[in-house]
Image (cartoon, rainbow, N blue to C red; front, side, top):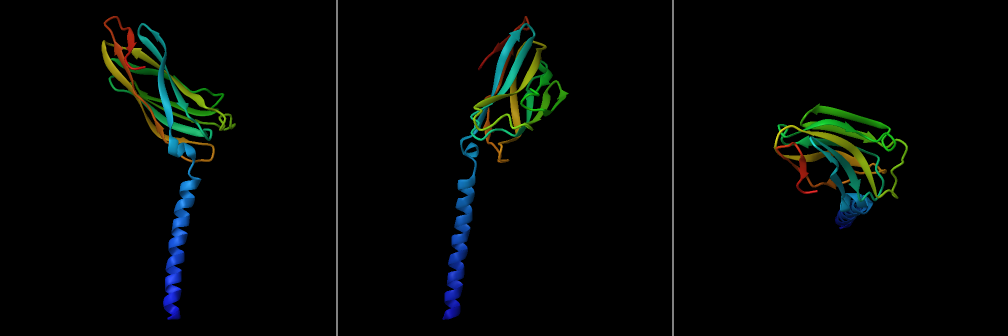
Length: 176
């Protein structure tokens, strides 16, 4: 009889411990993981044949320690990526790797903790695009990793930027 009580008690304690661990993980989860941060793709400067685009992350609730993001052009016969830069003030350790006219890999680390929990949004990068031929191209991103100051993953989302290039190679932003 005593052995049965011990088994039941052990089972009960195991269940309570499991629930405690699960709840502790849920409560310890960063708010930024639950809410999500938006990465805005915005055209800043439009000229005949050229577009300057910025990537800005918003809704930072617990700072930003670093990111790894890829930017793509869906139609390189219309729009190609020609250059990219990351602000060294916010991200003193950064890498810009232009894979080709269709893709650039961006990564940056905030070594100085300049992007804290009081920072609402921060510009991640500038991308230079060139119009090649009339048509439509979508600029979109794939987020490999974005982390807050505690090392938690920040869930991000973004809306693609659609660019239409006219016969005169003037770029029209369709959805910005």
